Image (cartoon, rainbow, N blue to C red; front, side, top):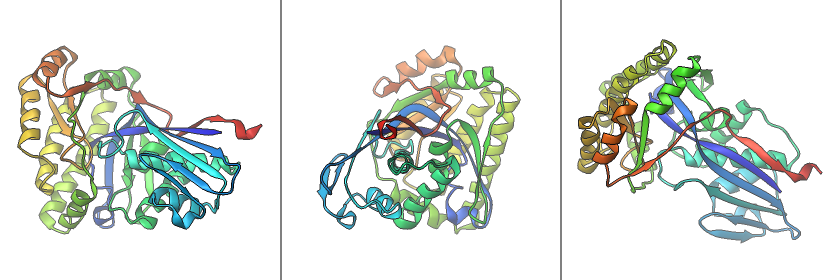
Length: 328
């Protein structure tokens, strides 16, 4: 049996600039961190020659082409695995529509585990590249590249997306006490709402053809570099201002990212002492994140008592194979 453990991620500023509609004309940049919430993929050798896949559904088929789950089908096809395999997935939190990059964490974890199944090693760079190939090219998902690289590499990074399609992962070299202060300043709430991101992302990609919308995205990219500089200078509270400005711009680029209920939650948090925040992911559901001085956290939690407060810490490792008895 093989078990991969792949973190989910929180994106701070610059989200959307990782989509081809933007970075093919202007280099994009995102600041994100992986967190201690994980996607687990278990792979086992089956005695029979068929394929069994367990997720929210169970599939049992004789041929790869008959698999319904597109990420599994395209991954097995690309890696030329034809059968005698069982794949099971579980996650620490609701994995659909969370805004935490769960789909890409699944893909990265699956590819990592499949390479171990084939007794092959794979670098973080190749892991992220193949995940992008599966999701963007094979499955035609209207998404960007930040989630795959975040899940593969792990840690707190500035991730740059260049016009030629290449991606550069730059760890943010701030002091450990600054990273800890950032971690302790963040509050995350589950809205109880999930959504499929594809429609919003398709609209966002189309909107980026508009020069005014592109200029807004360019400001968000500039804020990604400003966040990196602020963290390296130890200015954690300034991140709250950047989150707020990023959220305001994001809502202007794509309608449907927020609504009256989300705006109400956001304003309640600001009134209770939050310096800024955002809805994680494409929008309209999932998790709300805020930055506030720790002394204000109790007030914010009370103000948002209809939402579920989730404790999260940073992850440093990226996707890992945590168990592999196929080596024996």
